Amino acid sequence: MVYLDHNATTPLDPRVLEAMLPYLGSAYGNPSGLYRLGRLSRGAVDTAREQVAALVGAQPGEVVFTSGGTEANNLALKGLAFAAPAGRIVAGATEHPSVSEPLRFLAARGWRVEYLPVDRDGRPNAAWLDDVPAGTLSFATLMLANNETGVLHDLAALADKVRERGGWLHSDAVQAAGKIPIDIKALGVQLMSLSAHKLYGPKGVGALIVDRAVVLEPLLHGGGQERGLRGGTENVAAIVGFGKAAELALGELEQRRTEQLRLRRKLEQGLASLPGVTVFGERAERLPNTVQFALPGHHGEALVMNLDRLGFAVSSGSACASGAGAASPVLLAMGVDPDLARGAVRVSLGKDTRDEDVDRFLAALKKLVDIPIDP
Image (cartoon, rainbow, N blue to C red; front, side, top):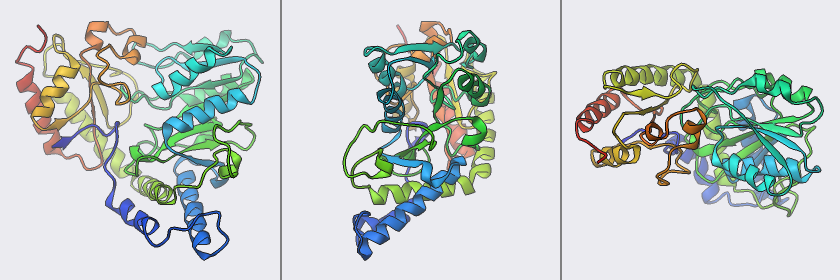
């Protein structure tokens, strides 16, 4: 199997597993315990907090560990909303379901949710915020990199506008972390969501970076863990794995980014030889590893299944929404024709992807597109 769906999840790095193993065995203490086993676990969690913070230029005390990116997004959005009277929220039009669904929940409870439009390449229209009066915005949320197209969003350009209108800025950086350099302070972001399994760490652990000035209402009340923002005994082994994955991602960032960008360009050159191919977000700055494309007359999910039979793992869009059969809301927000959007296929490269993987994928795809997929 040639795995080309790293935006959905990544394989666990063996070095991460090695770091986790003691905390799945003999080092089983509760981090809240005052005895030696507890102190050992607490020290491991504190180290991981430092490693995760360093990946995005945050302070260790700003890191709140969660069960993943979905919980981090929910804690950010609902936590802000539950701590304040209903007001106005601005969100990106191409957000992940773990952002758009909590916003739908809040809208049903009196919050005014408005969506920042994007251009045909998926770039947000920052000027749209100019019509939002000062002091009327509770908070805004905008992803750093789109999970389907890989398009990067200029958060720094939006942060000043959000602050001038009285709001906090949250960013879902799940797809960006470990793939591009991130400095949360330079971006002007006060809350940022991360997930370990997108950067070769374990599933089931993530983090919300929370500026100390931000007031959140917890979703989970309990023993006061994580600054009182996320009650429950910490999953020490997973947190340790997240920390190690973050440390490796930061140390190897430039090497990974350079190689994946080279392979992405090679892939795009190969795709360009196919008649009628469309690469979504092609003119925008994108993640170095992500290509989403469509071919006229070919349904995306059918191509994905046929490629699977040939030994290639790719997706037709967001892994959290695959199988729905409908056109991607991300592409529709970009003004893509629904028929073309239903043909979307996403290829996301990884740190271990090689030239021969790209060559074999292109050969298989070219063979398949000679076969009519749709009736």
